[in-house]
Length: 333
Image (cartoon, rainbow, N blue to C red; front, side):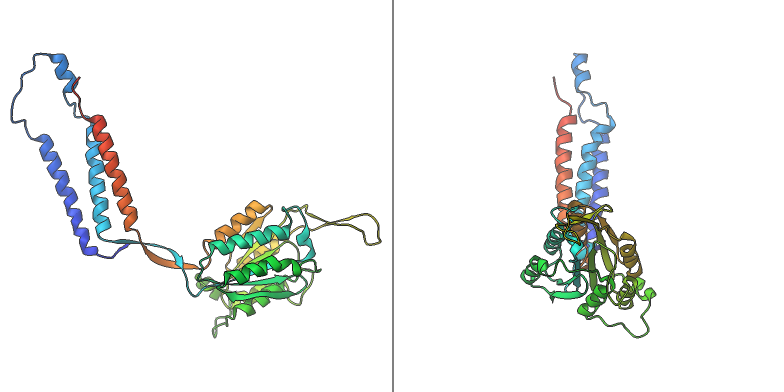
């Protein structure tokens, strides 16, 4: 924690002074002696000096301390929106994304989660979109134009249904789209771990195994690692997921094709690049993953003023002190 006016922290000296004054007033002898003939009345009004009588005073002193902190304009460290960040969304649109084990379909759930992500991520962050099946396609270049990206997400069905899953090529295409060049002598995985606040991140979703492409998944991951780009991966679908085709290969009845995800490969990609892996077996966990990343990506550590928080704390403590004071004060019968 830091302070905009640290010298005003000297006002905290008021707190021990107020505490000393309070105890002095409590311990001083009464100026006038009074005679009671009714001992029952005396017993009902006498202060037994229990600890609870000091609670309102303690709350008042804490409120006073909180107000002194507020005067000094405190600032806390938190994540603030970055104006230089880029997030590339990479979405699998292969035929297996039509499976319905994730409602309404895997692709439909992924589209809705991507829309949620756009609502969460800071508006200053550039967002790009790559759709891939047997090969990657740039659906939207990195931009702050949310309308353009939303339209590209809505149009993902135009890319859907093609065979194959080229995970490695999609990662390489996302790195190229980000436009990040490796610095001299830094093309190692050790470089990734030293860049915990990379301005570029990849959010990669797939529901299957690699079946096509020139690059293997970890080769694509190494390209991201070489330029310090973390890849956050999501494995979408259930292990028993099935894709139903209306007609079989020879014109017979419907085919049921197993389409399980590949969490092991996607977990390795996240590990190699310094990102994080999520497993989503339903639309709720998928939305939660995108919400989590939307609240984190595109942000960097920064200072934010928390004066109002201390003022709210002080107001609550003063209210509590007043209520407790009324409850514990002695009353005449």
